[in-house]
Image (tube, rainbow, N blue to C red; front, side):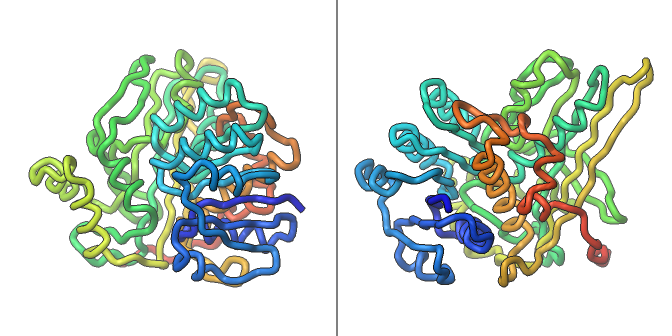
Length: 367
């Protein structure tokens, strides 16, 4: 059994711990600054907990000593601190961050590391890059890659058509920070919340718009090889107009703590969610312009004896799959590892990656 540290005892961290302890191949220590949060995690013979101040380097290094890997489910602003400690202690590092600047710093750290540093192992960034890169490999010449992902309530009941499903800090960060894209072959930054579009899937209409971080390192990997590459977050129609009013008209982009308080006290969380994944790639084969699309919906379900939301399942399954592949030596075990280096077939064949397999779809919501 391999010893693993999971940092963060929230919804995602607890889901990761549940998957890893249930499989029987990992001993897991869940660390958090809050004893109250740790006490909410269901007991398991292969699980222990630790109250740790992540900002205390000595505490963090003591926690990591002798471990195989550390998986960060902590807020994005703690990413670098954890990655630095992992590199110092020769412990493999995996995270879920969508923050572009944090990933750049992790990449720089990896240049001298003796272990693997693997950021962005969740859904988007993460699985979405694996899908996009795999579809792109089917073409002699790639023209465009359009990647769309959303974690949505199955039954929206407010003006935003939205319920909280994951980190509020991460949500606000992706709504505010600039977004990478490739436009006419050039890698550029585009503003968040812009370039709104609509599409339908299974009879349901969605909107999609620019948000930060979802592409991971794919822009850098495919620069010079594709004419158009972009990522947009999926919501139900009407969402982005209200968000833009809050951020721009009311100036809450400069007061994210106020926006966080509003979201967390006005938007209820829900376990009845759906993750929508929609990737379209077009390119040339035998001189003809052709297109391939990957479309999938993942719903909340009972996993390892507990009901988990769709975003918990997809995010936790993503990072657990990468950990498994790392433990097997199926991906590089040293340096910076990009998500798009991972084979889609290997990912989906993995015991955790199988949670992404298309299942019988729930009925479309009422109009």
